[in-house]
Length: 339
Image (tube, rainbow, N blue to C red):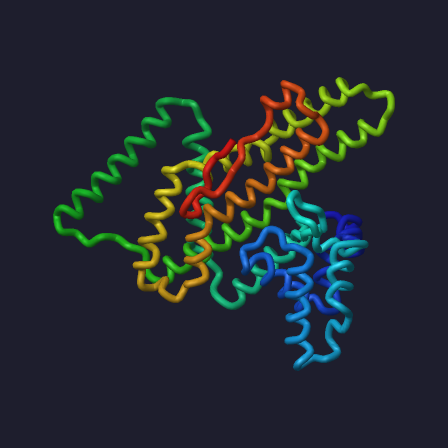
């Protein structure tokens, strides 16, 4: 962490300007309810301004001096200039512009949710330490191609499982988490889910950077279309070889996995049977809709890559083979692949 970067961040970064704005609490709350609480990735201009108008009416009933401009003015200000808390763009099939949260606003929401939940609930130190140790152990085991190390690990796991099975058959008590440990782990899982959903804006920005590079090359008269196509394919291939691109591809496969969808359905069914989670209604609902929401987020990122292919590369045969899979919602709300 360097001083000059901190000075620059607090001076011009949209995340900092949002946190430092006069009406930050009202703005953050409105954006959170419209996008996160409502489970919306994009919102049409007319809907957003109408919802903001109703929100301002409610505020002015008790605080008439707060946010006194017109809704259209705020929506414009929040998506232009140094704010850039919303991204305004035109979506295929819509006659009006739509808005989505920017990566900077996603960062603010994640930060505030983390701080506020930590203050209002508890700090999940035990569950997080266990998760750190489990992750490190998994890296040690699965990061090595040594067959002897893997076999020792599997044998240790087998022996541990057999001991537990024998103890239960012998009438021993079943080891369970206490209510605090259950709530702690559940809170961690819901927080991770919220953080994951916020990360998609950053993933999308990485894909869009390719588009900007291609557009720049297209504007240079010296480049032939063949050279531009070659550059674009090289750039897309390079992104897919980066850690973020590889992770995103694996994520899409996981979201589309029928076995994982069935596994999640079974998990949710058991979650609602756990007595100490009865009051965690919002968290359970977020987990229940997890695959559907994540598939929508993935589809939005994939639409960016499709636009990159169709707009800049045309129908070149190499490009057609590179175009990504379509993620859609199957009957029942499950994600599925489509042509």
